[in-house]
Length: 261
Length: 261
Image (cartoon, rainbow over all chains, first blue to last red):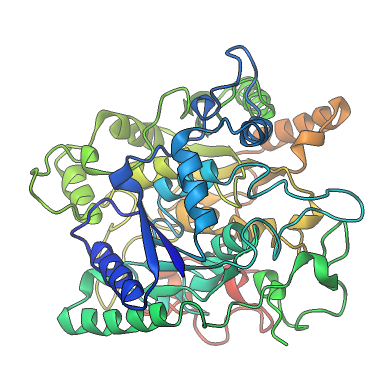
């Protein structure tokens, strides 16, 4: 199978760099083809701006969604964006690897999402009407592909637990797992999270490496997070509210959108 | 009072640009001093990398937190970062204004957080031991200041409601409100959110403008979100778990960290 790993750390000689190398080696050992988008090494441009849309007349107002849709349709996106889109189409599984900075991804990876996820490619796909609100949340360009996060944090696991002060890590990652990965159709696997990385000693690293290799071995068999699909009856259309009676009566917020049954 | 508005939209002739102008004008009418950090106009660099730490030897491994802390302590940060830190120290209230892209802020604003929130300035502040885990979540460099978000979305308000498919907007913004603003000490006001902006007609815009002016008039009187403070007894130290018995028995996830009482 084909695996794309998008790597967003500025230092190759970091724990993140070491974990990336372990993941890539293990995937290759499993017989997979692996490509890495090393955003810092590529000099990735993070800001979506007029330069993303060379066709846009100089005096035209920049409407990002409209310009993105027109450029995508016309094949007029910049080469760096086109190359990433081709890698995504090539991949059977996509891994986003990053250090958790301020409870989400680094700017350079957010910029990869902002720029590569064009209108007509990753959003604004399919019929939008009173009967249907697009191919998203379980459908879309990446349907049939898998994706997962590899995330490092400096904080304690307890701080990110169900009652921990930072909020539960799965809730902090929901806007990415559900909003960035599930939205355009990926099956999303549970995240691989390593906490308190600055205190990781040799034995701790070995244990993490073992767990990571196991996750890479099961990349195509691990059960995805059972997010509810938009267009399969759970949501009222077009308001997209979860239908009454669905969801654990005690559930609130993000947990409602996982079908525990 | 002094107000800093950090603006993250690439097009001044956008709805966001119009709302910014309304907010700034209203704040000035109220007698406040206003400064705007227009990140796109400033050509803000989004990626934290070696160039952020000119003192770092060429052959040294880049550890972002360590390099950030050393550069902050030595006054060796880059001028663009220092200027933003000075503006934050000058401000009595800070407003972050942005379009919601992929359920969080645009890369350029994330890069402002990543680069301006130095170690020793916005995190890694105060004693870290078994007895205390830093000055954060209610304490820190911005204690006594207020902050709020102005956010535009393309989606329907219902899609972002309690049972809406995107997840509740307040939960989506929690990593920013709680993790970026409350963490270094800001009192965080409820966000000002405008939905479905591409469909806003003249009457709709006038109504939004009126609501925004009202929010600017009450910037220094609106009651902050009652997030629980880390070092005032609600959390066990050092695990930072909310003590048993605190929080609505039905509450899960982020809601636990708001003191409803």
